[in-house]
Length: 318
Image 1 (cartoon, helix red, strand yellow):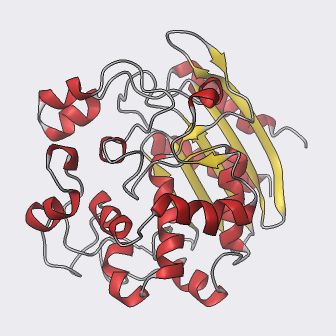
Image 2 (cartoon, helix red, strand yellow):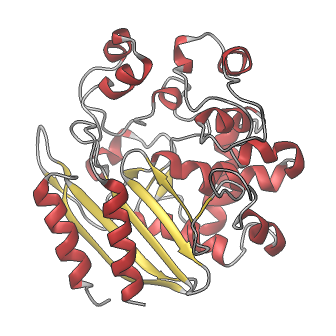
């Protein structure tokens, strides 16, 4: 595979600027990966471990479209769950559910915030409810997605301790969620470096996932998952087409079923830890960028700008 020098130079500049300590990318088409590389350090403190193509990242909300949405479209009544998949359910964006006894009860009691169907509010709570409708979620994910695609060794939930040297570290403690929750007690619930455990608090305190996060994977595995959507391998083509086109016309944001839809017709998703996957069906391009931008602290940075430039450079190579 030939190096994409302009992308490497761009990402190295961002690493040097402190945007993230590492980045691994994979770019290609529905036929496979054409360009890939690993840059920087997957762990920067308290020791330094270089990133490689085998580095496993906490993919955060990429779990939503690649795993939970796929299972929901395979197993549930699409019309019944459409408001959850399109983020038009009326639920608020986020709650620290782990401070409550029961996640689902907490969502029903404290989650509603606006009139359903009147706007798009991207919400983790939608995906926690979808998770609750998929009994034995981890087994379903393995048997219906990861195993059929042959990526069980590169994509997983609850990675074993033995894989820790391959895993990119995330935040030192749970300080960012403490600020979101406006509750300093949240910070003391998790102390020390989060490394090999899911960063998202709702998923962590739910045993590793609540449908909104929890997937750990290499860039190659994320590419393979996106490729399965391009090729309609796990879902019928008509369902894929519906899911990857705008279902929220007239509202404040364009959403498919589980996917964000761009003005140019691309579909994709991002993850809080610094991950993203985007697919351009018209040009048959798949673009995966995994970083651990929350390591060692989840400081605000310009990931939207960085992703935009990465996609521009990736499409330029097409």
